[in-house]
Image 1 (spheres, rainbow, N blue to C red):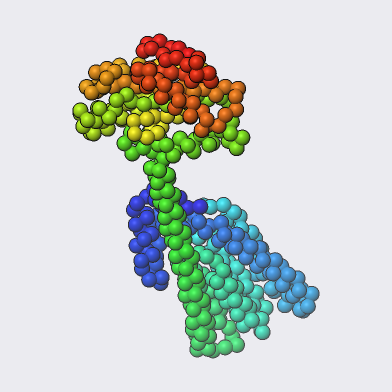
Image 2: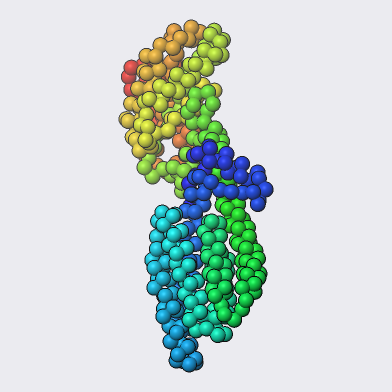
Length: 417
């Protein structure tokens, strides 16, 4: 397959320029021509090898039939020139087994075609009589079939056509059965047919090249569309202010981790984090400073989790949700306390706060261990723990317990259950 055109703007521009032209004016050059040849080489090589094998087979079959049906003297005169074709055809097949330099493969094909056409013509010239004219016509037929089915560069095709007509004219001028004028007239007649065939082959090649250009352009557009879709998906899952994941992405992550049985097999902890007195920060310092605070807090939260496993999302407003797969209560509480301390240590101003001069964080923690609960239930427990943490003074971490009487807040700098 051709490479991605979107990786090369100049190549993409050239593709668009060529497709904007009329079909008959399409002409590939440079890198696009190299890509096209590489694209069609395998098919072209298979066709050429198959054609050579069939020509060699038919030549051997024809020589055998001539030996059986014709007088031995006539058949013997055909044998030596006819024996040229099989080894020549085999040599061309070997030359076209794998890609090589274009000039080398072109030279091998043209030389092989010349020897094959010469062999067919010499069979008639050696036998003489009725075979003379017939074999020359067979030679032209062989050339025409090659021109039609070989998807090769126009220069190579023109060379094969010229060789066929040159051999025809040269041998017809030496034909004792016809006058020179008839030889020239016959050559001109066949030339019109051969060059019409060349023109048809050129149109087929141009249409193949145009199809290739469409393929390149479509691949580029599909790749561009895929990139645009990826960007849209990323935007749909990313909070535009903080750059971390948003609520939608977190919901999808929870559904994926819990699976169809609504149970996170490895266990998980959920942290609901809320910036204390955030509305007062906006009222005193303005929304721009509030936005900077949200960005900084989001960064701090991400710095305190395992990048390869944990998930942080802005859940809404000044709330953040943190998911910690595969942790127990002690580990979850330690992470939450580290987050709270890091936010407090950042010394972000909040002059309207009733808790501190600086921005602080209240965190509710809920952990699923052996009990099979849904992510919604785990979130409700973390939210309940957060509510209690804010009711009991803020700037603290509270771990959810099934028994309300067993819940108690964790004072700043300490962990409790």
